[in-house]
Image 1 (cartoon, rainbow, N blue to C red):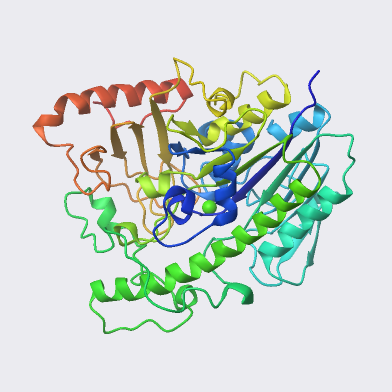
Image 2: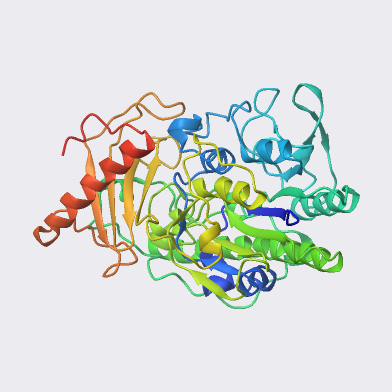
Length: 472
Ligand code: CA
């Protein structure tokens, strides 16, 4: 039997693909992350099924959609009795650990399970001198660790790798807090981007015309809906909105990119360690983020919407035994597929209850003929944060159909103010920036019918229920 591969699963929080140079970033360089893509594969169409922390993380661990695993919102922590890939790998003889961001709840019912060792941040955690919850009885014990969070999490991983039993394959979840809001840099990167301005995204001054009401209602505009903590200074009150957006974008994005630079350096330390220990050949290294993020796109920061910048996850993978260096994959991969991939690679049977599909053939460069051509998305937290409306939708390679059903439906944290349902259709080939809703355009009537049917079919396939007013 072939030696089982090690798994190093690196996940950051809110790191958009368009802030990585291997994805063609216009604003920064990430040489260490690029190494993974150069020596492995870059996925260009990897998407999350619900663009916020807790739900995406629960999907990744359990291989199921949120209506199945129960973690639909930020206020529905994951039940740690759920079957997850770390539990299955641990049961199959892997040494398992998680260090860093968890954000799936705390205490005995929600702390990490399926891990031999762990230390996680409570909630969002702090950038400087963070508290960690360490593995222990009744959900663990908390103590403060001095230093910068990205360095500390990396040190924990390196220490754990160094001390591990070399006879056992490992599965290490190396999960950064960064670059989540409020984007506090460390000293080492504070001097970056001091000179000159960063290029602005083309849609920074989006006026939200030709879209549903949800876009204009969202309270996540750069500058307008930011706090002095976000921008590390007082916010001018007398600037017209376009000037305020342009000014705040520079401050916001520079902080964000400084925080990303620390991730890049630290990932480099870990890649160097794998090289030095002779582990590079037999370790699957993945870098991803729990969802995407708006980097001034549509005038926004944050995520939640099914729009491209938020929906897309960076996903790069290196495993020299099975992945050709420098390859690019454009098939549709989802966060629900990660757990099946890890199990497949470890030779562990994938439970029937898991809803994703192993990405392994895609890593190897072979797309199965029946691979998906469409994906299903749902954001449940109606108006709870940034006044983003509840919606679900379908994305194919050419189109995106979004149904803003605008209803809390009793979801924890969601606000019970239902609005009339609205729809958006984007022709992604003609309008990749999603600036023109063509739902009502008669030329697209056939596409609307087809996609609506396909969305309802996908919804039924994954076991979700449509909104009662969605009767088309
Ligand atoms: Ca996140």
